Amino acid sequence: MKKFLRVVKGILTENILFKLGSLVFAFLVWLAVVNVNDPEITKTINAIPIEVTDPEALTRQNLEYNLIGENVAQITITGKRSKVSNLSSSDFIAKAPLSQMSKVYSVPVYVEFKNAAYQNYVIINQKTKTIQVSVESVVTKEFDVTINTEGQPFTGYEIGQEIIGRDKIDITGRASVLNLINKVCVDVDVSDATRDIVGKYDIKLYQADGEEIDPSKVSMSSQRTKVKIEILMTKSILINYNIEGEPDKDCTVTDVENSATELKVIGKPDDVSKCENITLPKGTFDISGKIRTTTITVDLEKYLPDGVKIYDSENRKFQVVITIEKMVTKMYELNKENVKWTNVPEGYQAALLSSKIIINVKALPDNHNMFDVNRINFYVDLSGSTKEIDEYQVSFSLPDGYEVINDVKAKVKILKKETNEETQRASEIESSSEATER
Image (cartoon, rainbow, N blue to C red; front, side):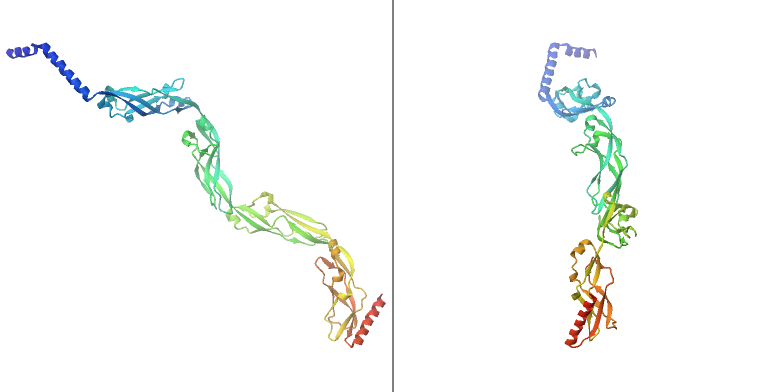
């Protein structure tokens, strides 16, 4: 055993300098081989997403931030090619804690490996060391919520009352965002509607130019609200009325004018569909004994059935103007040549013995100015005649607007038809009779 140890000791101690040199040389050869096969390199990594952390550092102060510029980091990494070459932006985490924000709103950026094992082999050199943010106050404002209808109901229908569940909401957010809000509303499509619309709708925010604001940028006390939109039916119905009675005996109705013949109404479809007309009660337009033009005004609203209203309140009052004018009586002498005989007994002829036939005509002054008595035919009916000479009722054919107010009779002689000589004799008798009456 001792001999063996002396041999080992001799091997280790003999030519020791030579042996150490061989060991160093071998290490250098190994190092050279390694450096040639896996050299150290530097690589640039771009577009590492930066995660902004600690937002509560601002929210506790009723503040919010906006990033200025890009939200990505750039780094260079140095290490063995075998370690570095396969690394990309997805292997790193970049964080910017708002709790470390400076007075000039600069936030430091920290980049590290997702896999901590790389820290022993690869060195990170950050190109992006900070990000810049802007900070503004968070405010809460109250806004009115309105209904915005889109489209039109079906023909003959219109929008009535609009009811919204929440007519006000609180909105919290950055002051710059809230200042953009011009309208807070719910959008409801009423196209071709014939019945009430009821439902829940999203509350939307709009700028003055009509562009919608992303609701995720703010916090609203309510996101949705109930809405009811009443759909009403419109219809035109006839106005029925009667003029009753007669004006004073010396007056007449010359014209009737009304403010409308139809009335447009609106209401629930079930109510309006049953309403065909509006009939004004008896006695509403009574002109008995009237001596001058009469104007009668009626409130139509109270004559409509329940659930039906007047579409335009300006048409609520219905007016009828009844023009009444005084009649004038004038005396006229009929032209005897215009006499017409009726029912003359067979074989006989009639002769007019009255020298004058006077009629009293009642008419409007303007009608008297146009009256031509010479164009008026009068009629004598000889039915049932039994006497040779007798008085008979005279009838007339007068134009509208004229009235004979006196009882007119004519003295007539009935002669048997004979020779021409006898006819001439009858004519002489008639002429003699006229001379006597004068």
